[in-house]
Image (cartoon, rainbow, N blue to C red; front, side):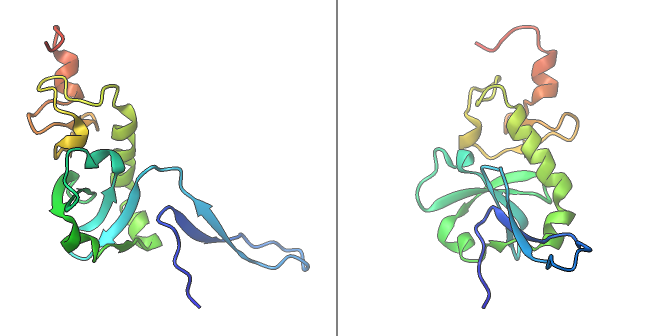
Length: 153
């Protein structure tokens, strides 16, 4: 019987123990990430972050495409039916992109763009390849905002 796991759990086989009385067994490890990592047949590995769903209607969802390093908005009924949990191989292949998203999400000091004042949860965005921060649709990221002398009004 195959059991489906929660979105933030992954099975791992416990390392070999030479003692004869200890049998190998599977352990479930839980992720501390507040977002879900899934696989879509056409989009590839995607991140569904609850924070990025602000300002969207019930019929829409914003997904971060790990391969393209960009967030886009989709129709929920069309995309969600094809989302499946990632295999360990897919997670390993996408680890660099997932880590970049994780660090950009954690490094946000302000939840909005300093230039245009739009909330990052309400706009499609991409990650800057230079500073690994969120780049707003207006083109501002940490590279640009750190070089400015004056704060945005």
